[in-house]
Length: 482
Image 1 (cartoon, rainbow, N blue to C red):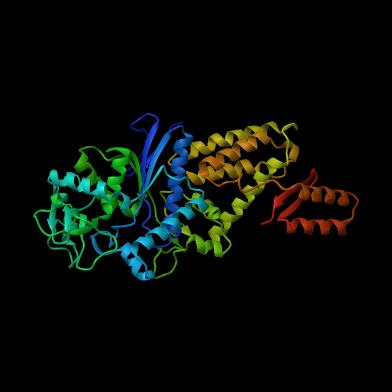
Image 2: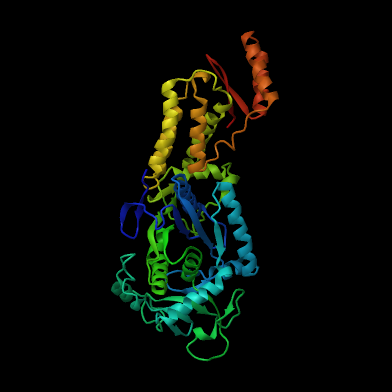
């Protein structure tokens, strides 16, 4: 089974071939930890988690790095100007930037756990890789790609001829349309900061600039890394100069990822990444997520409205990563209902027995569905198709007698769903306890005796335990109450 991915580098959907036959070096742009992540942020990590799961299911050994940006990300991404987002968060909350970074990094890790995201082998903080970032600046300076101006050390994009290729930029138009406040000391509008010097006001996060990086022997200069520098330094120091796949949002293409390619390939002389995958935007009620509209729902906001993180994961998987999504509470409710239905199907594994004779066609359908899910995911991570396959397989169980359900086939399908889609159908659907089972048996007995009053009493007792019973011609089937 061949994995095909849409490669931003070539603008084509291509068969995936790693540098090493069974090892995949994967880098994911992680969060800037100055605030709670919203649904748009989280959607990317769900998609890239699905990518990692699919690669592993295909038999690859995945070595994955994801950064946590806790320094250097300025509010104006395209101009290397404005306040560092960590300093902004610190001012907002009356804390130090270090405290803000620690708090929101911990919240990110908690969110990853709630969403069932597999922890990358390397989850790295920018502040832990300052020496590696300075080493990268040093290499670039030695190769003649840098210059120094008043506010920092910059990369000269004119010395990297293919700079505009990745994002198909029109640099002349960019130069003509530069804002009035464009830094006149920069040689080119597209040049970007590798290392910023601290201004007059002391920062919480700053490091001494090594003297060999400065143009002249001057007094000690404190500084901090540019946002783009950290990703290249982390990726190359852990994964090597060339990686297989780099992921991020489409908003990263024209600036952040373009700059990563330039500084990485200028330093190493090798291609930085063979495949680039980008997730599209998620809107809310058809509108871009923004602070002014207060429409950036967090996982905490969803929980307060009765939605779990896994409900949201199901919602995200209903759209393909490369397509623009639209979040509404109505759409999330539909995803929640879909997940609840799947969980009740998962509960059937406790109510059927392999000793009974299953329906042969049903057994084949369940077993075949696992392969069909992988075919969908190998087709450029087509998660909507993967979910449709599950719906179709599960629909064949509706109305089936318990004895006709192929228990092994159902368990195999649930294993596949949990492994590659991460919906935790089995861990979130425990078997009922013996007391509850006795209540169900007792209810069946009183129904046989047409004692409807007692039957209703037992039904209410079951509901208090979070269980509802569906009566069929072939007996009672228990489900989890919504």
